[in-house]
Image (cartoon, rainbow, N blue to C red):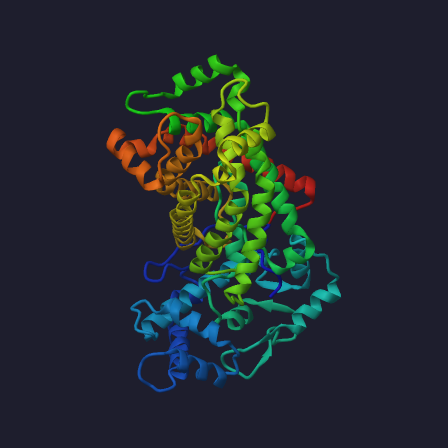
Length: 504
C-alpha cells in the first residue's frame, strides 16, 4: 500500500459511457465480456471447495490458501459479509460476481487517481507524490524499495511481487490482481476523500471524528487538521452567534402564550442589551472547541484499539459505536461548559460579569450538581444524531460513487459540502427535541417555576404547547447551517495552507 490518500488527476479523460447491465465502461473488463465471465467462473469453482454452489467463510479460507493468497480470518469474513445479499452465510455465483465487479470498480477509481501521468502505470515517481501529499518525503530509491517490498497473493500463480514483470511500475492488471480478494468496504483511498467532520462545524457537537492514516499520525498532519478545524469552528460560531443565541432564547422562552419570532427576538435582545448582547455565550462556546476536539480524538483512537479493529478505517457500525462512545466521553468532560454557555446566553444585562462570575453564582446558589443539569437528554441525543448523520452521509456517498465516479473518487467541494450539510441537518432534526429539553433543564434554575425531570418536562411541553413545542428555535438553528458550513470551509482551507497541510 502506498499511503491511504489518492491524488487528483492532472487531466481527466472525457466521462465514459456506462453499460446498462453492469454500470461500467463498455470497453472495460468490468463490463462482463466473455474473457471476464470465464475468469470469474474459474475463480468461483476454485474457491467453492466443497462444490455446493456457494462460497462460505471456510471455503474461501481454504481456496485462497490454495491460490497462495494470505488473508486473515477477519478479512475473509468481511468479504463474505460484504457480498452476502441474501444473508445465508455464503456467496452464490451471482453474489460473488456482483461483489468482485463492485470491488474492481473501486480499485479502478483508486488506480486512476494514483496514475497521475494517466499512462496506465503507477511508478516510483507517483508513489513519491502520493506520499508527499500525506506530508511524507521519500527518495526515489525508497519508493522503488516500496515497490519491491509489496508482496501479493496473485490469483493464478504462487506468491509473487506485485510488480511481476520487473518493470518497476504497476499496471492495472497487477494492481487488480493484488487487491482483488481483499475486503472492499473500506478502501482508505476512497474513504479519505470523503472526510467531512472537521470542516462542517455548525455549532453543534460533531459525534464521529475524522479518521487519520498511519502516515498522517506519524507525520503530525493529524494535529494540523485538528487545529485548522478548531479555528474554522471558532470563526463560524462567532459569525453565527446571534442566530445561536436566538435559538437558545426561543427554546427557553417561546411558548403558545409568548410566540417569539425571529425579528422580534432580535429586537428584544438588542433593546435589552445592545448589539453586543447578540454574542452572549459565544466566548465559552468557542473556548470549549479545543478540549472537546482533543478529548474526542484521543478517546476515539483508544476505543478503535479496544474494539480490536485491524483496519486503518472502520466500517460504519464500528464508526458509530466508537464515535458515539468518544462523543459521550468528550461531552461528559466538558459538559459544565455547555451549562455555562446556556446561562450566559440567557443572562440579563449586568447579571454576570463573565464566565468565572457565572460559575461562582451557580456553585453558591445551586451546588456543583447544577453543572450537569440536562446531562441525560444530552447523552441520549448522541445516538440518533450520530446514527442518522453517519447513515445519511454513507448513503449519499455510496450513491455518488455508484452513479458518477468514473476516473476519480474525488467528488469535489460542492458535493462534499452538500452531503455533509444534509447528513448533519438530518441528525440535528432527529435529536432536536432532546436538545431542547436539555437546554430548558440547563436554564431551569434561572427561570420561575418548579424544577422538572426530563420525562416531566417532555410531558409538560407536549401538554401545554403540543408536539411543535419540541421544535422551538428550529428556524434560526437551520438558518445558520449554510453560513456556518461556508465560513468553516473557507477558514479551514486558509488555515490548512498556513499550517502546511497539503490538499488531496
